[in-house]
Image (cartoon, helix red, strand yellow):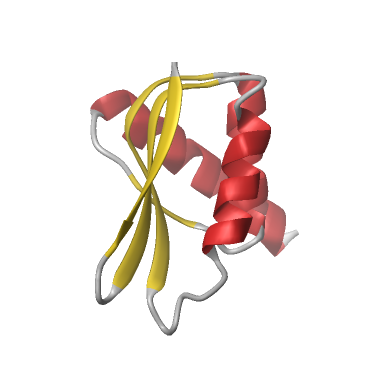
Length: 97
């Protein structure tokens, strides 16, 4: 199962990702993030990974690519938070090199 819901508020557009971040759904996340970036009118765009149950290696690579494009993330839960922190550290090191 995989689902992306868009929640618009006055200050933020949130993409709520649910289920398994694995192939073939990884490309869908990238497309949805790209499309959601249009028409923000000053709002922040955040990808919410709180309801993600599995992140494959390809999913981690996609998250890193989205970080490179300026994506912001939120999460809940120990495992997802750990994965995002690890990817964020790797991304920062890569940017410094």
